[in-house]
Image (cartoon, rainbow, N blue to C red; front, side):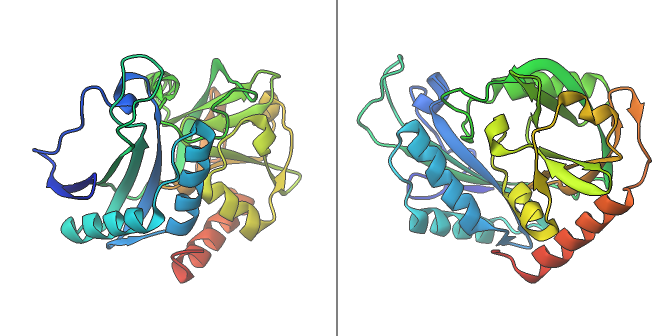
Length: 273
């Protein structure tokens, strides 16, 4: 297995990042996960644009898009697989043990892991912790993911694949690594970015391609929505058949099924929409 680290391909067994890298010591970093089918990344331009937005939000130098594209292409060519999770990680680089940054410059890592297509439907749970819609990291895809690790572990304990958060004012926000959509009176709704959710790339495409409405939604909408579905880079559009103790149909409802078809067709015709 080959990965890209700071300018070139390395064997994964010998690739090393400093133990004083700010991404490790204080979580000072950002990342993107890109779906790659048969060596071809999906929506890479949108992912790189978001990487730059996250970098600016943390005060990191803008990543060099040409370099990241070269890195992605090299890693994909070196590790052929049918379906992969392409991970771009960009950190503050070697730095002091405190929160101040050093002057060594950022670290860039691009790695690839094999994955499989997700099931057509899944179970989710809500968790008692909240997203802070007014926090310094709100809307940034940072490597500070420990909160998501804890919430996802709780979901797995309850036989679910995802945990959903409300925000500090009791509105539906997002999952640990997904955006959430609900169907009300036959119409698709999803929380707005002001709720504190990440601006998911798949979320953005689904809103554009289905006309879904961005709507402030109370957390308890999950107990009355006709249909619920998730979106993310590796889930694409995935129906939800259970929310906490509420059982929904085991197969995608008609609105969700249509959204799944539209996404499959549009994404299949354009790899970089």
